[in-house]
Image (cartoon, rainbow, N blue to C red):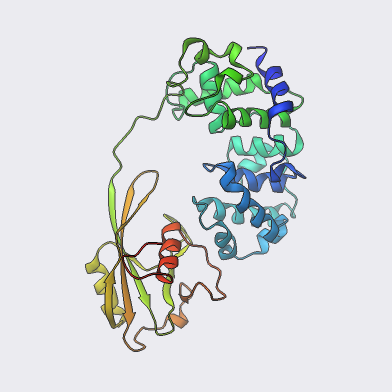
Length: 354
């Protein structure tokens, strides 16, 4: 066990990742944005989003001054949109309560939206070399295998055990290198499936390797069947070829994003059309779309409507509705299935696929 940290650091110098965008000029702000983007998202997916985001918001003041729709627009397709909303909220808090200076203590960071113990430690370790331990998914996997930790690591008892192990390995010096090293080990060698144990720098003391438990550890979360929910999207087109979009409530699924008016059933949708005085023609039903969340499946039925005349009440007076066309000036944050449908609407007929 004593060889774990020095072996890992030695490996990192030769084989670790040193050229990631957020490793260049690793300020607290730049590392923070990367850590939030990397939550539940792979590095290769994050890199182009990160580069566009930093170009638009090179510092925390620019991020705080932006409209949330600008932030969500740049986040579109990255998923888990609460992360983007929390980034924006935290930036505003830092500017209003910390005079734009990024907090440099773990306790202060944990009080900001979207930042937990591990993320706070990663930010301060990677940017300021503070001797703090992290416990993200990669680190949990490495420690579960190295120490043959049993049980699902989402359970509090197992998580507490992993925190103790993480702290026992974290060095007081070279913490930034160690933090990146253990994340790199989990991402590149100690993968979920088919780990590359033969070239692993810490296989000598790894209990999973010694006893052939790599496929069993870490233990998976007990599975439950995901429920299926139904939804209808109203794709309402006006004479100018624009589609009606509505802003979703700030909390809940796709909170704060723009999308098609959504209803639990076609009956509910028809009642809404009638109540709004919306007369339509040439209605078309698109193939059903399944979007899977962490806790349930959502089966979406897209229903396209062309307006008859100019019959729609007061859209221009509403701040939570707008007419949208992809080649227009509006830049809105949208959920992935909404973005996909919009692209389809302007490039194909119902039932066709790109």
